Image (cartoon, rainbow, N blue to C red; front, side):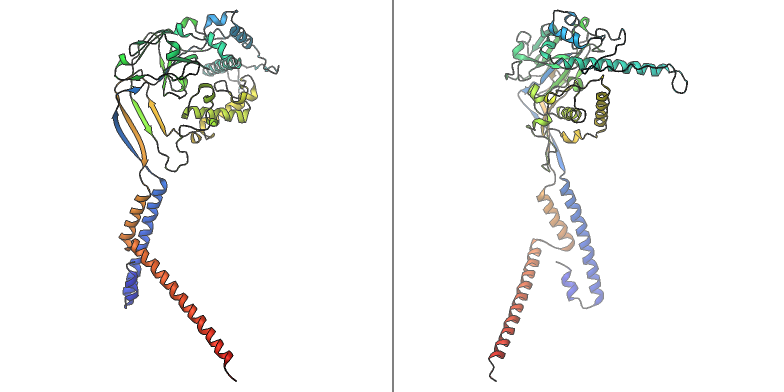
Length: 471
């Protein structure tokens, strides 16, 4: 190590002091720089690379379309329908065919308990009359509560196969369907499969990879760009069959996702208004994330079932949205002993009753915790390591696709190289210098061992001479 020799060999004290100051300063700067380099290495920074690649054809995504009205009016009013009778029994006392109630009713819960009727005075505690704005807010809250109660009762029937008969049927909903010029209406089982959505009723998935029988189907590709080589739909929303208590808007909700991913038309979908033709293109973006710490900062393709309640009902894989909703539902199950109607029921857990004050208060607390991030669902649900993101689309604009990949930007070889540069720059040390220091330490230890052994041998000889010396 440079500097140490100068300190030892210098005869003038001022030179010794100068070299000591220089050596300590170099050691300090080198230590600081090494600490900075080690901190950078511990952060495991990532470098993002963006490439544009071209493919001869791209796999067409799964397209989910839902009518914004879940149940049709005429089948629900038909007393010959088994599902309609079950719904009428569940919704007894509720004005479920109009958006406004005809009269107020006290609802009995499953245990036969009746909620006390709440009475409101026109004047508040200070003697002032209620403002029109407050009355409007209360009216909106009451309308929202009625809808929540209605949706809970629909979910409680647990007869999705019968409810599907009351929803919008494929043959009435789908007037025209064409993919790459091929009619996709007449081959429903091959091109489409159906699932029940708590808010939209019957939703139909095109090119989802499975049919209604759970059998795998061939995925379709697009080898050309433009509307003719995409999916073209003409839909009939049957607005005359809408039930005002179930929806406040008319149209279709469309969601585009990867195959094997749970569609969430309410949270991620796009609304299409009736009376208009909508033409939108898409571009494919492939994101490859890196997990530099190997601590599940991104999720692989096969996560445990405990973070995806939708796997059992839909045979879908991991997605961040599905994981967060599963986390939300399990927190409700843990803290309230029930789940909202919008989630799959884990282990036959009961649905939370909005007419039950205890359930209602508990659900609100969990929702508040979730909105504030106190449930830690975001941290428990990292993004997938490999994921195809498809923006709201109908056809491919181009066959070029963007690949965004993450790679470690500062690994061990880079850290060792910078460490050697810092040591060499400030104190003139290298691997050979460390070898010389190690050699010096070994020589010192060897010399001390020899001296110690020599001293012990001399002491033993002296004792022997004294013992055998003649008197």
